[in-house]
Image (cartoon, one colour):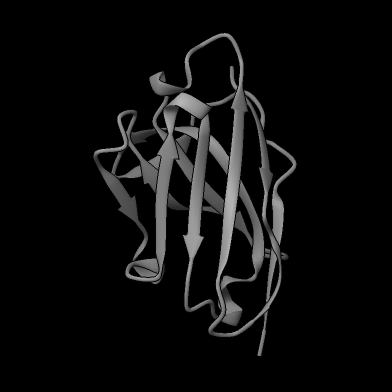
Amino acid sequence: QVHLVESGGGLVQAGGSLRLSCAASGRTPFSWYNMAWFRQASGQGREWVAAITRSGNSTDYIDAVKGRFTVSRDNAASMMYLQMDQLAPEDTAKYYCTAANWRHGTWYNSNDDWGPGTQVTVST
């Protein structure tokens, strides 16, 4: 169980950038977890967006954000980040970070709870 708090969301015009942060705390070292960003648009289900392995050496993205989003982590600070560039209105959603596992061809939340999320709104 890891406690997670997201920040950095906001309102931005299409083509703009935002950097999301995820602060982790708990008894288990942050470096033990694969981590992922998920998002949930209004009226839709939650989907994973980007993932990063324990060491940070490997990353994974859904096709819709490849080349625009970059996930990174700082294990010493127990932080994960999502740099979002060339934002588009379809990126509008609440973004969540979580511990994750790879299974059956996709990333799943492996944590007991979700954090509060951070809202990203992209205007035209």
